[in-house]
Image (cartoon, rainbow, N blue to C red; front, side, top):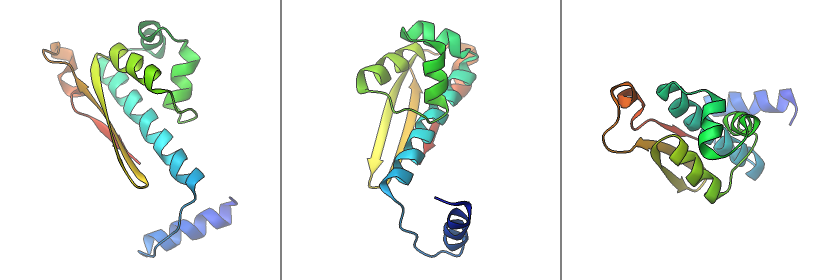
Length: 122
């Protein structure tokens, strides 16, 4: 998509016009929202990417790729990631929108209270 085409889409969206979005565009938005949810939970816990990777049995570049929205992990990997972030992960899908939420396990430590219930949507 060219810059001028993107700008036209943005202008039309701001003018409350319906803009048809390609499947790739929707998928990219969902991957970014997932990455933002991982980043938000990780930083709320005060963890580095390397520490989350260690806890999940992954490599730090994999965490970076997920947080950057450049990858959509498998369900088993999402499960390991949720465990590494000491949270349950919920995903709500509705057509082209997706909401990713990490909910802290019961009994959070005092420094984790701000991280509970944060979500990111696409």
